[in-house]
Length: 465
Image 1: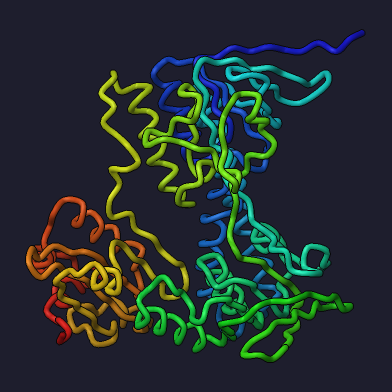
Image 2: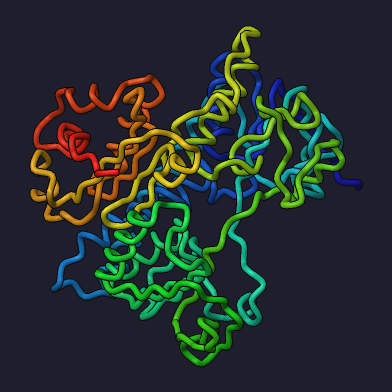
């Protein structure tokens, strides 16, 4: 017999179970739309963040910082990974039920590929299902890039961030190629667990997009924790030994090497779109494989939208969430069309080293380059009298810096390298979005002892021009 193909129709088809896709799917199903969500891996219900990204990695940050001197490193690490697995499994099941448990929503597990601009095929042979919908949302995320370094891709010691999160064997030494957010977060995690960590960064200094004073303080903290950071390098090759790999690199005209039991390339991520057969739908992509979208996230086919990492924008879960809001405004917003991605201002970012570094808005160098009249307020965390919380948790390293418009008193930007920075930055970003001045932030009432009350003092510490 010839294999039969099951066929489904829906009001909305969502491809990918990321933050934007699942948020939109639930909202649309809640509004009575018939929704089919296709996810190619049962391990990824809920998307990257709760399964192999921010949730497990930040849980490892917590566990690594809680490690005591008397804890045996390997045993403690294995228990930590078990804790991560338990949490991610619970989140995965919860995310599946949150969508599939709705009356008008169905989750299908399998790889989707476009047949035409309204239809995708999922699976093959007897398991093949076609899904047709007048509206389609693509939220397929991104994947790590393995740089073209001779010997790296074939090394038996090569690991991905997912491997590090899911493997309960602590590597004795870890070499990380790339000193961006992912590279530095894993460097801090594994050093605190007890591994020897080396970071090889191509730029002349760490965190080149940050002001030099902030980047220098972060580098000092990381080095103080025992992380070896080598900047201004060009990695030239990898060769395997029995238990380790040797990474060769050039710096200042010399060829040097470092050995590691595990090698993590942390040089960026690219959109996961190759398997979608987008050409069959007439959806255009960039040279990097990102789906081209307009300010309302519509692709070259206006009924097809791309959300999250797939559209080549900022690779953060909360941006994917806001992408869902932009799309839902069009699908459920009664034609008001109020939201565009170009409306976003003061989007914060956090690097989860210890203590974390959170930033928003302009850097000092950017503001000066634009010719703005600014006031710069900067103070070491240990010197902020009005903020005792760092002392209560025994983490007083770091610095807090604000860039303020000298004419309007509005906050133009902030860099917070301090305990609780990931929380304080949200207050600052909200103030920036709504025109709250630096003086108003300074004179507000905050709970005590809390990190937010640093705002009561730090704006008075204006640096001389």
